[in-house]
Amino acid sequence: MGIEVKRVGVRRTNCSCSMPGVWRALSFVRGALVVFHSPRPCAHIAHGMDVSSFHRLTAAGTSVRLSPVPLLTSGLSENEAVFGGEERLRECLRFAAQKYHPQAVFIANSCVSGVIGDDTQAIAAEMEEELGLP
Image 1: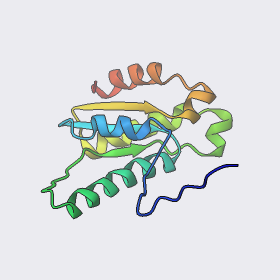
Image 2 (image 1 turned 135 degrees about the horizontal axis):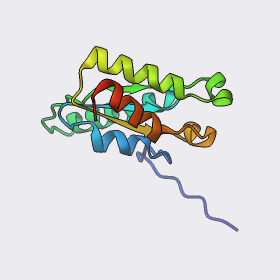
Image 3 (image 1 turned 120 degrees about the vertical axis):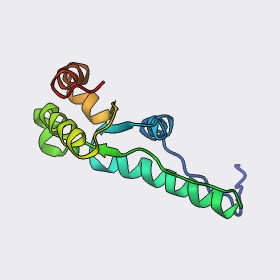
């Protein structure tokens, strides 16, 4: 016989993915830009968790000023999940350099890009040479 426990007023946002942690670690590095080599929902989840944290801190009376660096996603779709998303990442990095002029770009791999085997390190080295950005 089990005991059923109900918790009143306790709500936690959990995420088993490491992408929000990557975003939180890099989101305030001045001059940086973060690219998730992932489907769009990965960036949405990370951004949503930050917005939730902001509202919780504001409600608690904490003075909060947020000005995170840009967070972009390569926007992997079903097509890239089958055929590879390396070209999408190249396009995303070129767009990021042209629009935001960052001093450094951080690329985070998602589960999808890891499973399909995109060589993110090779693309990063190639684009570093092409764009002149670390």
